[in-house]
Amino acid sequence: MRETQAADEHVLLSVPSRARILDLVRSAAEPLTAADLARELDIHVTTVRFHLDQLEQADLVLKAPVPSGGRGRPRIGYRAGALDLGQVREQMIDALAEALADRGSRDRSLAAGRRWADRLPEPRGEPAAAVTEVFAQLGFAPDRDGSTIDLHRCPFGDAARRTPEVVCRVHLGLAQGLATRAAQAQTSAAPRVGLVPFAGPDLCVLTIDGRGVDTGVDAEGRPA
Image: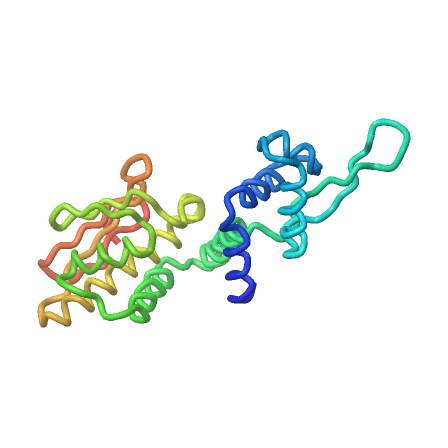
């Protein structure tokens, strides 16, 4: 989707009732009529039809016939139109991760994470602070305690569980690259950086130790 299309969709769905209508249509197993949606949301059917027209113009919903159960013309229902971009994004990540995994990519994944770090803006502060800031911006919900950073949410969680040897090592490489750049900015030695994926329910743990360079740990927490 082009940036202008994404922006238009964001504006379109900024109306709460319209966003709720789209959520219901996307989650329904069968097409829903305007009357169905009006009853579910407790709003006037005319208002529902107006929102459906807006969503249809944006290709977010499509008209679909609903059998009437008797004689006469079928009723008009609505089903989801455009793809769920969040779901497609996750599927794309899965496909890339699986492709890399098939090619024996542990070192390649680590290097990819370090290259990612090189493309980001100059990290600020000492290594642990710099890593925490960037991982917060990326949506990992980090909680830092000294040299330990607890990551409470992974934006790529499903893909990481299926192919940790790829996804988790990319994240480790990212943390290593950020920590190295932050250390260089302070003319200090690059720190040791480790990652223990799935250390607990919804928890991964980064460790940043200033005693020297290390390649970290693998996806099961073993030394790399």
